[in-house]
Image (cartoon, rainbow, N blue to C red; front, top):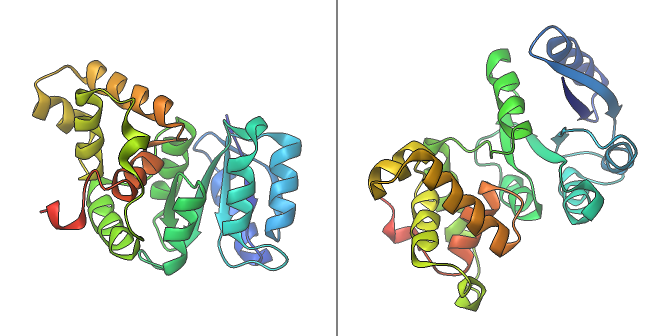
Length: 221
């Protein structure tokens, strides 16, 4: 079972989501939170697999709550999935930067929400290729000047290649096909790049590709 903390300031929304998630899909809602501070407390206390986090909440918003969870070494395995109303909500960019593993729309179909939770719990980011292309292009256009590329000095040439392809929105299968390697090899390169760069997941790897100037918005097709 995927252990999940549900954070949303609307009691009716929480009740609806809890009923939906508890009705199959292998998700166990272990706690609820009406604000970001309580979400952090519940995550620290229960160490769930996933925190389903609304952005706009009182006391502490979802972005700051995400940042605190991501910064806590004891919560390395806790993934944050952001709930948002609009695909390109301005807060989504800050949430991803803060350490979120992806986002899901509040009006998604129930099966899509459950699938998103399963994907994030498995350690992947919930950024489908089509969404990655739009989201990261917009993110990169807002990003400040590229950070020093020295941060990438420890990567091999192949690890840089897979980082670029991931930033372009390619799936692991597509990366393997593009580089003429096995799927397992592609996954290994991505995993090693994340380990060397100390990023939590694929979403953070993609963001770093842009922030370091490894890839720029104009390179995307």
